[in-house]
Amino acid sequence: MYIHRPRRRAVSRVAAAAAAVAGLLVTTAATGNAAPPVPSVPEAGAPSGIKTLSSGWTNPWGVNWLPDGSALVNERDTLKVFKVTRAGVRSEVPAEPRIAAPDSGKTLLGLVLSPHWSQDHQIFVYHRADEGNRIARMTFDGSRLTGYTPLVTGIKRGLHDGGRIKFGPDGYLYATTGDADDPRSAQDRNSLNGKILRMTPNGKPAPGNPFGTLVYSYGHRNPEGLTWDNQGRLWETEIGENTHDELNLVEPGMNYGWPTCEGVCSKAGMTDPKHQWHPSKGVPSGLAYADGALYVAALKGRRLWRIPVDATGLGTPVAYYTNGFGRLRDVVKVPGEKALWVLTDKAGKGADRLLRVQLG
Image (cartoon, rainbow, N blue to C red; front, side, top):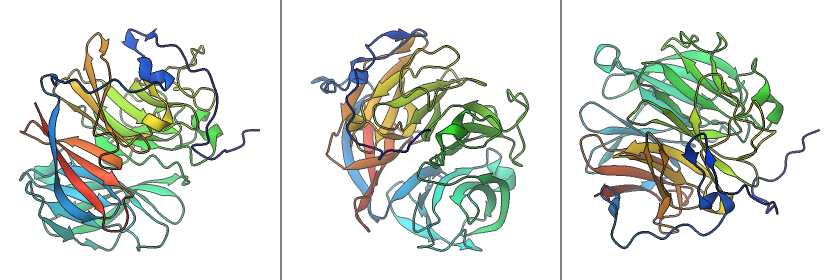
């Protein structure tokens, strides 16, 4: 029987040797060794400066861009949504009816705009509800959220909720779900937990899904980041249990191993990560692609990872701002600019920040 252990108890295990996996590199960071130093001469396009754009936040969780150049930023526990200008000025966007009441144990995780925004003005949200986690749809008229409509229910809730939702280049909605503290669910293809889901904007299985259901990939523990690179490949960050956190290249129908595997295990029928971290340097959440690199916001690792990526594989990960800004929850590319927005996490009530990172 699987027994749940505290998330970050030190465990002595010989880490997998750095090796090429399916043509993509697992670097020395996989062993828990010290992170490579930040180059004295930054690589072209790499972070070159950081500043606080907005303060006074409480556990902000995600950033989504509006066509007018501003963004929607939501707070996880207050369940509040704010419209934020490029200069960092924010105003609250009320939801009618409210998605849930603060201090109810319910949380607001993923939020994303419809790819057909100019026609429908729809917003999609992933949140905790009474019976479990839900994906729902609302309408944003520029000043408030209305028309709450549940699309997917029955996703079990727990400490491992996943919760990131994004539309892919194919126009379908992708969602990460955690195993809800039941590792067996990740291997059960009839369960919505421990999966990456792919659906139409109406919450139905997307055409071409490998099993004819919402399930796109399985064997995930607590996936929290999704992004696509410039070749249209889907990448995902995943929080492991005690020994390894993961960066996965996601393909339809593949089994990513949990709970049999945590990190690289080279077991038949299971897909190894393309990179792994020791938790002290990882616990990855938000994930973005910008200018030839993947950017990973690390929670316990308290740093921003930059990992070059091209058609042949991954370059050497480099850590930026280690311990400089605390836990980092999300990272997104700023449209039309060589810059990123980064959210801090759990700094205290009203103590989190929205940061702007200059690239190049």
